[in-house]
Length: 528
Image 1: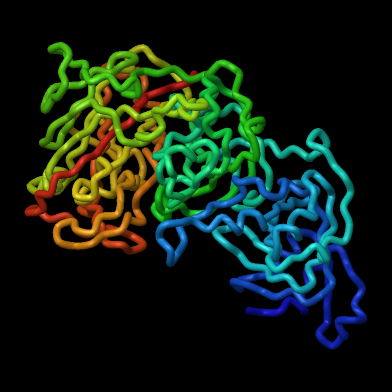
Image 2: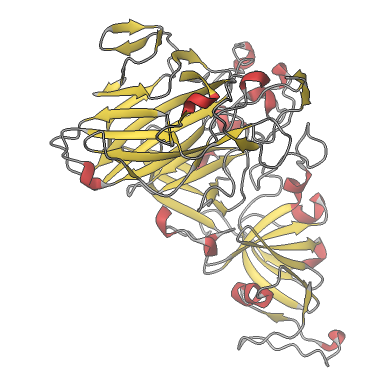
């Protein structure tokens, strides 16, 4: 760790030969403070330098940062840091800092929307997941504040694809956005594992996990995850989510969430709204669905060419919207079922169940080894078939959500972890849509003392619900008589229940453990 005393950037020169007590306090830019860190991981600031910026949030907002599972007590998350965090951005909205105060009361001294002058003497500057953090602040570091308002707060409007790491910890408004999947609440999760609140007190939530994402995309098809912590009571208020398009505003963050995605995602930028008003999507959508499979109505029948079926094996599953078919390439049983996302929220008492979606899904039950074609050395997944004949547009996308497991430990391992997306126009020669491997995590399960002779706690790989993904497909696939899209395992790696940071082991031909992989929703859309 270094000490920031000597720093030359044309704005500030602090010489070590000068006694600190004789230094005159100087206001420096956010960029100057960031640049002073250089290639170092952390630096102690020991001079009276000050920054001036707009305060983004109110103290105590539950959605300020990712709250991971406690590193040693695996049955809880640590919510205390959230109450000591504030965000400030430069007057030109270009850069932002996360401010970590010593106590809740210290953080509360900063008022939202105010123009604050803060002395950085005695603070620690560090870089964390692409953002810059100042810690060790107290209310004594706050020199002055000029009252502001939401109306006067400087707006930073930019397209999703234009957001970069320089925008981390700033407040951004993204135009022409909409949710990929519009069923249920803002986050459809397994409530028993969320942080206990007034919304779920009756079902005895155990507080093991906090924070989940919903996939949002803009008019160009660029995706971003909207992250919400379970302490945000408005995440399911019975009103559902917007069905149209509009703006999404919030703080840009970049913190890996192993239960949703982690180092496996190249661009993990997220947006965290401060309240429900930050989501304003009332305009008609510019996107049209070519075909969609959506099982959220929880009916048991599967639509096929041969009629309604409860279970299918090799039959094609017809889409619920548009004209398309889906076929499982893996040898196994395909069932339309209700997934155990919100099993304890079927109560109507005091409206606890409002806005809850008990996810319907297409569940594929298969032996672990069957997810791979050992002769062709390629993964077996699902294949979509549809037509784009006569269609013209600017963008073509695939959206899908999936999860592994069925709530039981013995069926929450052996599933393929990494998946890819491929496309074809003849059903024979496939090309990968991109070089991304999409991570499949298992749904939560209760701790078990004896699974195959071993004691396992709930895995760190368990997610709160289905993860959502968007894949941009070549626009040249429009205007085709037939298009095939394949979602399949890309590596011979499966999930285990070893309680490590990455619960994964090699897939083997003799691994015959029964697995469950469920697809919650699948959609092919385009816009003109």
